[in-house]
Image 1: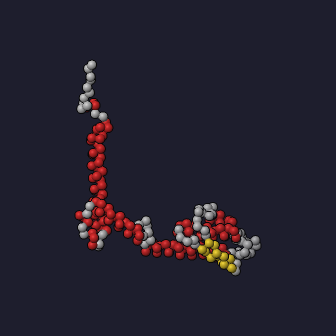
Image 2: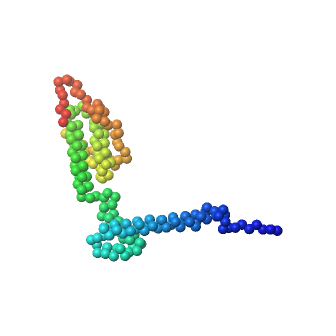
Image 3: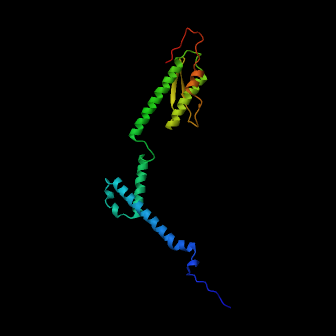
Length: 197
């Protein structure tokens, strides 16, 4: 019986998976390691800049890759704790938020004043309550703080509308035309005209 021997070294016998394992995979691994080294070098430079005032940054060039990563993690944790990450509160941002809050509150108070300046019977009380609640809810939705409470003078008493935490907008159909048509009722006699704010 004659046995046929197959030459494993013949070019046609070399499979693609064998070529991949022998040539492509090591090349990809070298490229991956080069990318990691390049990024670690860049990270080392960034950490040297960030820690330049710190005395521990003197030997940063001699650190191993794991040490650079540990220093970076520690530095990022410090920044997170200080609120510098994730757009945390900075003095300028806090100042802007305070100005926005003050302006929004003034505007809502002016709306409440205008609503109560109208003669009795010309304002739909339910719509007024919904409008004031909507103003509070919208503000709370944008600010993500405690709900805004707007004191509304009504007749001789003060009503306070405390907006709940938003789950969505309370009144999505309020437009200037809509509000003017349903909120304000013209006087019944043509001789009296109410003073609008």
